[in-house]
Image (cartoon, rainbow, N blue to C red; front, side, top):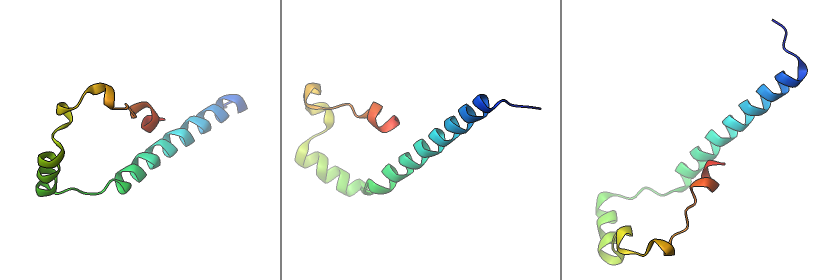
Length: 67
């Protein structure tokens, strides 16, 4: 099987992007601190649940994280 150079470069580029995306998600997971159920309950008692806030006060970071 022969793959031309352009196709080969595209495959490599996509593979590297996938690997970097996966590693970035792993980094985010490491950087987000663990919160016990007790701590989460204390936070919700102090600040309320996200549903208590106006949605316009939030910034959707999904696209940024998934790049």
